[in-house]
Structure formats: structure tokens, C-alpha cells
Length: 200
Length: 375
Image 1 (cartoon, rainbow over the protein chains, first blue to last red):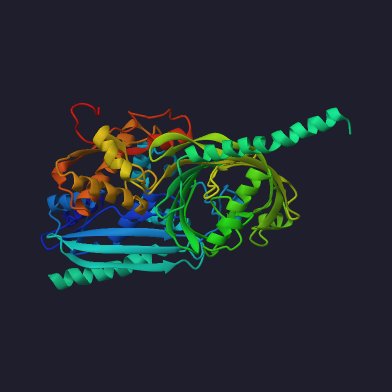
Image 2: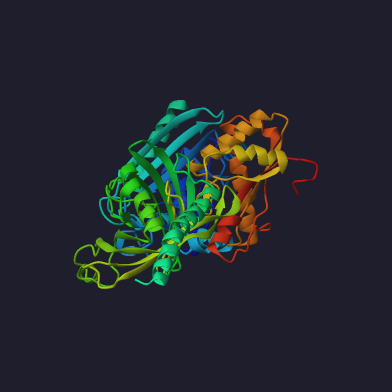
């Protein structure tokens, strides 16, 4: 039985991009947060797009450059026919006190995010590696409060720099911790896939 | 009345008017030598707040002025010792009639409150309050804030009943402590001292069990008595940096000193993303470079000492790179004329021990080669 299993594993097809797979390079999201960690948001956006844009004919390659000009060069080097640039804006219409009194309605988040305050690259890298896309999404949406607004922008560029799609969409959380990110990414991914399909 | 007493009274009456004039001239003199921080479009100031829970840094920009009102954009990031953070952007509008006469300060903004809250100022005393303090020494004042200590609403809120939020009106009398104390700020990248009127008062509210003792320092300028510092028992709000929209000194400094610290360049926290409030300064740099096509320039990024040396080095390089990228992509400055370098925290201007010092050290400098003068 053990022998058969081993053979089965060996015979399994190797997953990964094939010649027919269209590769989309994804740049780190440009993030504006009302509360919580920008790093978690970058991970969450990348993770969510990766999960929606990965399939038999699509693959996603994450880029590390932050500047638009650099990421375009990186995408060319990675031989990606498409580059996806995203923006993530989390807005909270809260009240605030000039002298920092909490009871005014200024939002006090839970102490789940140690990365923002430590500034430590080592901590960030270690934490980033441990954080899966799903947990990053959970972490980000846990900071959402009812009536918070999330705006997701996505811009798909061809290898020649031509803008193929440039859209943004906004959603308002109706309750604390509601995941408004995933449906926005799903909708964005559908529009991206349809553009890629049309271009083939 | 004896002759002696009459003579003394006569002397007093003779001396009093010149004495008053001397005091007023001294006050006005202090005002005249102070750099003007006019409440105009493009004015930006950075405020730091120390609270027991952590620190906050705010960037306030005046994005519009009219005969009717002044509009401020307040962006801030508050990082707490517990590891959480609060970040937000708030629009605030104050009418010119309130800037002239309102004896009230809006210390708290409620959730979803519109930008305009008539009857209050936000970042300055009104001219009338300032003048009253300067001439009479006292002024009745009100502050809209949250209660000090536990109230019924906050107790119920802690039990899950209601929001726990309550806004109350404090009333008290401000008393002038001094007319023109020297107050240090960073004005357009240079450390200067401006005269500040110092006042204090105790404020009480029927809805708050604890009185509130506050001290204020405001710019000694009746046209714009900007709040420079507000000190309570456990918190201090301080204006540490002011950037005036007039960028003419930029060209002069580059011409004479070959190096200038760029005022009005702001980045998102721990990020190289340029804040839109930086647009004016970057445009000014582009104009200067257009006026002097023979000038090449190096953009230097500097950070404070928080974080590791390598992360600061990277951040400073990325920030300098962002400014270069913006000049090249948006303002069409030839890429070959600009170099971007980062120095991390290796070249501090001030000790990093204080929030103000760290704010001073986080900067972008523009340098042009002038035969070794700029090193």
C-alpha cells in the first residue's frame, strides 16, 4: 500500500505554469489604512488576487519592487505579459480628539499588530513569512468596523505599458469584521480575466 | 489728601501712560520680529502628541481659504505602546468669523461630524481671544471635549450599554502667564524661535467630575494665533514644524549654500509613498530646476534612528527615489540631472531622543554640486 502511494505521488503531474499558462505579475499594493498594519494589507491583497487568478490557464507572479517604474522593469525581467497594479484604501469616518482622548470615538484597535510599531525589518520578515494569505486577510478584516469603507483599485498593464483596464470599486462594511475585501478582489479578478481572455 | 500723596499720584499718572506704551511696544516689537505664519492656502504644520498610550504625529495642511472660511486637512498616525495604531484623515472647516471672534475650541470631533462646526476654532485661538489675553490678561473660554474621569455614560458604555461616548462643554477663564515667550519650531527647515503668548486655565463641566487644567502657547500674532503647544497633566500637543507655502528661499539656498532641506515633503508612515501635501514643494523644485537648466541635483533621504540601520537605509533610499521619480515622471525633469541617495539615520541634525528631534531628522535634502561646499 505504501509502495502504491509512493508511485502515485511520483506520477502526479507537477503543478506550476505550463506553456499555455498566462502569467500575471502582481505589484505590491499601494495601501492607505485607517487602522492596522499596511504590511498585512499588502499580503492580503496579493494573496486574494493570487487565489482568484490562479487556474489551469493563469498564474500569478508576485513582484517585490515598490516604485511603479521599478516594478515594470521587474515584470519585464520576469517575462510577464501582464502587470497588475493595485491600490487599497481603508477609510473610517470616526471622531477624533486633538489631545488624543479615546472616548471621542477615535478607534482603539486590539493589540494584534506589533509590526507597525516595531519598525523592525527582522520582525516584519519573520512575521510576513509566517502569515498566509488567508490569515493576512483575516487580520486585515478584523480591523474593519461597521461603516468603514474599502476602496480597491486595479490597473492591468500590458508588456508594452498599455493600460488594459483601470478601475476601482468601493464597499462599505455593514458590521464589525466583515470581509469586504474578498468580494471586491473576486469582482476585480473577473474583470481582469475577461480582459486577458479577450486579448488572447 | 496730603501734598506728598498728591505728588506721588501725579507722578504715577504721568508715568503710567508711557509705561503702558512701553509694554505694548515691547509686545508689538516681539510680534514684528517674528516670522509671519500667515493662514494661507498651502500652509502646513506638523504636530506631535505625547499621551500615556503612545505617540501621535499629525500633518495639518490648509488646502483652501476664502472670505468665508479656512479648510484644513488633518492626517495623523497614532502608534500605541500596546502595538495598535490609529490612522485617519479628517477635513475641518472654520469660518472666518469664528477665526475672528469664537471664544471656543473644538478639541473633539464626533464620528461622522461634518467638517464645519460653527462657533469654534480648531488650530488657533480667535483673534478676539488672543487680543483679550494680550491686553486684559484674561479671557473666558470654552472647550468641547470628552469628560475627565468616569461618568454615567462611560460606565454604561463599559458595561456594553450605549456607545460610552460623551461630548461635554468645559468652561473656564484663560489667564495670561506671559506675552511673548520664545518658542522653538522648525520653520521651512530652519530651527527658529517664535514669540508665544502663554496662558493657562482651569476648565469645568457639569457633566465631568474632574476639572481640567490646561496650559496653552499660541503664536504671538493676532492675525493667526496658531496653537503651538497645549499641555495637560498627562499629555502634550506640540507644533514642531511649520512649512510656509512660499518656496522662494529654495532657489536662494541652492544658489548660495548649494544645499537645502526641502520643506513640505511628507511621506506616509514608514513608507516611501509621497503624501499629496508634498506636491507644492516638488513643483517648486521642478520650477527651480527649469530656471537653471545647468544645475544637476542630488536628492538625499534621511531618517530618524527608530528601527534597524538597514531598514532605515532602505527607507531613506526609497524616499529619495520617490521624490526623484515624481520629478522625472510628473514634471519631466531629465532623469540624468537627478541622483537619489539615502543616508538612513547616519546624518542626524538633532538628537533622536525626542519626538521633535526625530521629526527634525526625517528629511529630504536637495544638493547641487558646488565644488565641495555641499558635503
